[in-house]
Image (cartoon, rainbow, N blue to C red):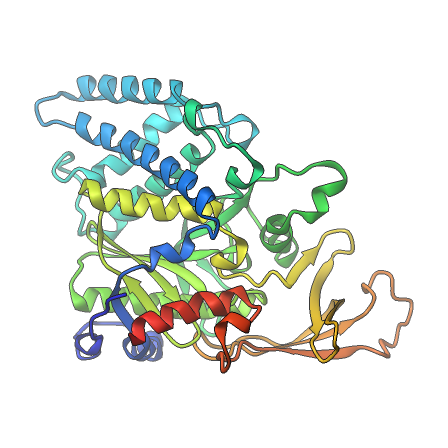
Length: 432
């Protein structure tokens, strides 16, 4: 991996509200910018599966490139519309139907493409400005959602050969327009976020073993009574998207700072997060970000107006739909048990010669993670029985679990936590 010094960001001049002062200092301190390989962290661990995913991403990028090529100054509005509609129809005809995973029509896909092409094709719309954040947000959202629609519409000659090659989830974007966190310190607002919509291929008796459903969807449904498919709130946000008007150092630092600030509330609301993904855009340039235990990693720019930049971004978005759950930043040992309507926490007793796993059920959250960087310490009061089945009203016998994510002191190969192995690899790359 390759990185550049973040010292220039520390001295960059940018205007931020007072509440972002701490987040700006944290972003400048922990930032490792222009890192090669950030997007690769979201790749599937199985090489054969990842090869299939890459082919899917490339086919989606080719679809969008064909739409971009149709946008020409010489075409009138009606001619352009006909060209785009014909291209979308031809491309969708080459693909499998979405089935139950989407209700989007050809007309919906056309309307979506018209919006994001304003961003991908500079000068195609005189009323659009890539330096206007309000203009870029809906275009960015439409591009992400367009890619999600195509994830469940693979080319007919590239159908999944196994369940492993099926997308596990769709990552969709939502313009939130001032959604706030109930647990935020100052009730500040967020404009755009990503949410994972689980694709459940498992039915019948095995349905309860769908990890994504437990970890993401069901937990969100129970976490906040104001849940809405159109307006996911902090318990349901997978990643934050921040748009800045320019890609200068000062503007990008502001974007990173806002990412840090909003991520605080993701940690406060989600007790099963180990790290958080984010996207920061400056004009037409996008960076993928990870907020980890002791660093903020930012990728090199992906320019959405270039073929190579679009492919890189689309490949990254598609990887999110297929990769293993820990690579999204979730702890699979903490999940929502739908049957008993409470969170379940798996504990491994490593002191025994033959380690055993015990599942405890959450009764109360005593300590929440209060900061982005650090050990992310949380404390839970749990019992061996779900509260709904426990007739012991005085809760005697309950135990306290302290959950933290310490730095790896021994061999990464001997550590059983996928997240630690994942970020250990990144840290070693930075050090080298």
